[in-house]
Every structure is written in C-alpha cells, then in structure tokens.
Amino acid sequence: MSEEKQNQQAEKKETEKLPAWSCQVERDPQLQFEGKQGLTVGEIFTLKCQGEPAAFEKKEWQFELQKGFEYGLKLLEVKSYQPDFAELKVTTYKAGGLQFGHLVLTDGVHRQEIKDLKFAVESVVEPPKNNQPPQPYGPVSPMLISLPMWFWIVIAALAAGVVGWLIRRIVRSVQRKRVARELSKHQTALTPYNQFNKDLRSLMREYIFNDKINWPQSRVKEFVSLLNRYYRVFILREFSVPALEWSSGAVVRDIKSRRRKKLQKQTIGSLNLTLREFDKAIERIEKVDMTDCQQLLEITRKSAQSIARDTRSDL
Image (tube, rainbow, N blue to C red; front, side, top):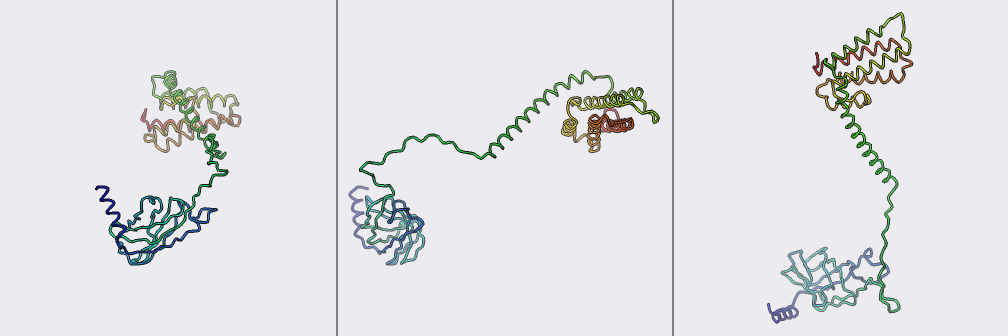
C-alpha cells in the first residue's frame, strides 16, 4: 500500500464519526510510587469510561494511538464491560503532560472514540543535581554469600560418609582378593563340612570334657580359639568370604546378600548366633568355663550341619 493511501485512510479515520466515551483516571494507592504525587512511568492505573453504547464483541481490545504517542498508553486488561461503561487497566511509558487528541479503542472490528483524555506523568528518575548528569556506578566487587553452619555440617557429613563408603569398598575388594590365597592355604581333599568334622574330632580327642575335672583358664582360651578358627575356616571355604579377617557382622551381611535365596532363615539365624557367641566368649574369656565350651561346641556343630544341608555340600 502506498504512503499516500495510508495517509488518506488515516485522515478518514480521524474525520469519521464514532460513538464516544469519556474516561476518568483512577489510581491504586498501593501501586503509587513512593515520594511522587502524580502518575509515574510504568504505574498501573484504571480508566473508567462511559458514554454512548459500544458494540464490542471481543476481548482483544487495543488503543489506536497517533504517531509519537505509541508509548503514551498501553491497555493491559479489560476489567469490566457493559455497552455504555467499561473499566480498563492501563499503564504509560511516556513522561510529561499527555493529551490524546484522537484516541480510539477497538476490538479489531468495532471502534469507540475516547474524548479529551489527558493526564500528566512523572519520571521516577531523579533530576540531575547542579546541572550534572547522573554518574554511573563503579564496578561492584564479588560478594560472599553467607551460608548457615548446619549446611556445612550436612555437606561435611555427606562427604565423610561417601569417603568412608569408598574406603570400605576398597578394603573389601582387597580382602576378597586375599580369599583365593587363603583358600589355597586351607585347601584339602575333603569338602568344607567333612574337613570341619575331622577338625572337631581331632579337637575332642585333645580336649576331653569331664564332669569331675574342670579345665584351667589357659585350656579354655585355647579351646575357644581353635574352635572359632575351625568354624571360620569352614565358612571361608563354604562361602568364599574372608571370615578370618572380617567381623562377624560383615560376614553375615555378605552371606545374606549373596546367598539369601539358598540358605533358610533358620540357617542364617544360626550362623549369626554362633559368630556372636564366639565374639562374646573371646571378649569375656576369663568368665568362660568348660561347660560354656561344651555348649559352644554344640551350637557350632549344629550351625555347620544346617549350612551343609542348605548348600548340599555333603548332606
């Protein structure tokens, strides 16, 4: 379209007779800029308009603004509308005294003239002092953000937990590599369960239980130490777990994680009980007597038999 035709259409719009509204400015006290009495640039306010009935059908309303007033008035929302009344939420981005000579509100089809709308708008920028322009800010140095102490405590605890977990994994990995060497040391032609029974028979020939004669403390200590070793060697060969190096809890957890489906619940319970009884006896060996050793031998024998039955190594 040529510039001449565009000018003709603009002149036609300016001279055409449109139904008209008169509008009043209404401000929201909560949105007023502190320290300013009048409207300010960017402030949201309401135009309450009324007059001749309009026939708007759509909600996508907008202002037709003259050249040079593009930033003078911006329609944000139609709050309410009746044919002869409307509330419009608007704002302005232009400072100074604004007077709209030919302002039209349209929905793209219908048009309504806004008559004699004028208001003053103040800038929120302070005027220069002593005729000097505002000075720019200098460079801002980096600022440290202070974090609460509990945050650093949590981070330190998490880091310590991760490091501890890695160390345990590394230690366990090294210990597992030693299992092959340990197995080679204790390898015999007999199965783990048969070798354990052979060791028990040898132990019983050397350490005879007698109701009339009690063992001295040194003999009790030797018996508990040998029985504990035989049982742990049996576990080492049966499950390929470093039972001679790991704690009782670590041994049970490892076997449960790898053999849970194969071992019955009673067998795992018996294994756990036997290892704990050995730990208690070694810890308070001065209070252990021959009768305690006999009971420890019995639960050890039953535990090994239960393990052998579940793993079907011999039974």
